Image 1 (cartoon, one colour):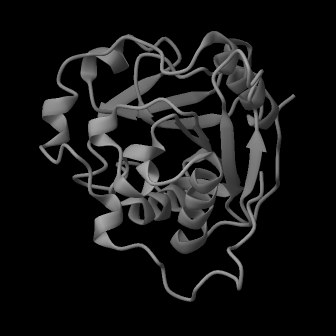
Image 2 (tube, helix red, strand yellow):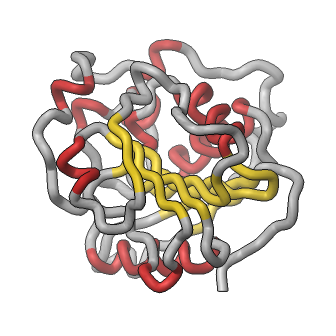
Image 3 (spheres, one colour):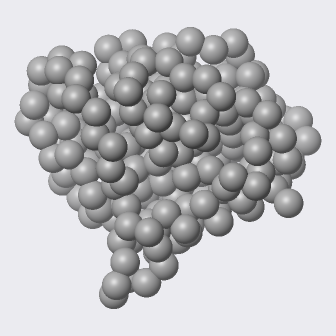
Length: 226
């Protein structure tokens, strides 16, 4: 799946407009997420593929931030991050997540500023939830701020969602378009190297599709998992 710029290259200015980030249910997100949903949003095969990918990119004893987190983060248990922070919308879900060493309830659509110091994390993950961001460039700029030099942001997505909260831009396209949208988020946020797209789909005929778009903050020593 390509991650190249569109034909003719990226426009100088962001092509995104407010209409791209409208959704069917524009009520306060806190109302939608007030009830815990202790379910997984991809099947077991896709979860295993995501865990294996994280094992490849997480440095040993990494400090990790899981954005838009819930009761499970799909981190490989054997890697034992030194810090695993979760930011999500429901306290009960976050409290039930065994992978996290700390967590905070925070609505990125209401306030995209991350409540963390700069250069705090080796890895930032967003798993099957980027489609709900209504201020994505502001959030991605914040991701670049909290990543350590050389750190990586990995954004995973599939084809499952809560339709009322998906932004219009996401609903209007398919997997290839989704990859280019996330690549554009990295590009127009600034502060990242070139994004890459990886197809992690375990078996397109029998399991959920799974894709990752990821990019690094330049500088520092690039460290991968064991």
